[in-house]
Image (cartoon, rainbow, N blue to C red; front, top):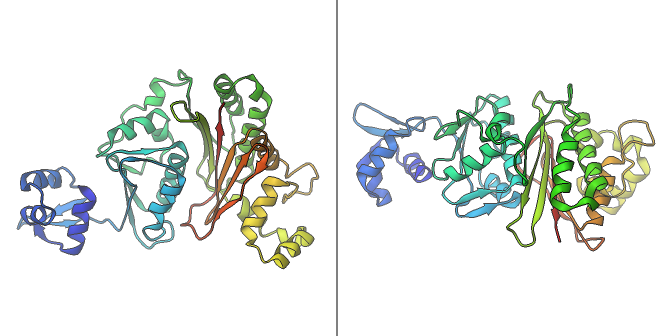
Length: 361
């Protein structure tokens, strides 16, 4: 109901509740009650007329479905880029039946924290879907969400992650990655749960992926917003799969490597230039598939992300990598890389946001 009333008042501000109800073909008592219970969004004057209250951008995820990264990005693309907009406030609606996959929850948290860092007023509205609010609380979402972000109907007084911490065989709660004081036990904790779910054959490979990604966040984070990492086992899907996400709000892989690439790797740069391929796409492919591209003058550097992709190749996994304005998807099947998915021109989200998706036998 919220987004429908917001739209009516955007088109015809300063009307009474009964007129809003008539336009929406709703009961006027229900509309009136809703307006009075959402005074953070609506304002009433002395003549009992209503207007929207300081909301510039409204982002609404689709209802009655699982929202993956593709649907998340589609919702963002439906409005002006929030971080680049002149809008002072952003209202994000999780409607009825909307369930967020871990990969989209990670992007939602990163975007919300970055908007708050830019002093924009951010509101996350779970009013129509309290089950999703409960789920993200279980993941530790609110422990890592900027305290300035508004949450409707209310931010949980106690995080469910604190109550049930480390007692699940399918969840590893979001853990903060502070580049200045990292908790190096985090990759071991995730590896332990991953192996318990998937089996001993993943022992060394799981640790390789998790530790390399953990180190990548410490190297590239720049904004004073900690990175984070988390895991979810989706055991009721067909086939069952494990999602591991890792996110930071720094310069990103491209932001770090593109400035030094032409001078430090002139032959590779010229090769890409002559091919006419997108520089972002080709650079990301080389970083993940070949490695040995680093801003540091050390022959042993630049192998971490490519070693992670070798693990993905071995186990027919998927890697989804979001950069500031683009995304690359690497999907391996039976040891072979399927056609690479690449999206350019996405709304700005700072940093690097990676999801490893492992399907289990």
